[in-house]
Length: 128
Image (cartoon, rainbow, N blue to C red; front, top):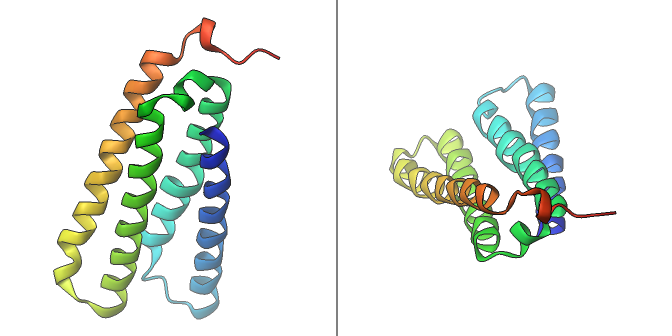
């Protein structure tokens, strides 16, 4: 599971950097929230989770690791597309959609925390 997290995090990194480049070239910084969330929740958090799942493969193979992967990715994608669209169009009805994506992501992060507390032990550390 760790390698999947890291690979997808790189895609979020590319999106975040491209969005940052777009904002700096157009002097339109209205997408700063999207840019920050993509970089922090997509690139950084997913990379770190992936590294932990590689170091502690039992956590990565667990059902919690798999559910975390699904909820984190689906939640972040829903949240970012809805937030991007809201900023672009001003269509406030997207607020609940952002909330649904955010709640999905938060549940995934809570499951990640539980998974780490259960499986991050010296015995489970990847050797060599």
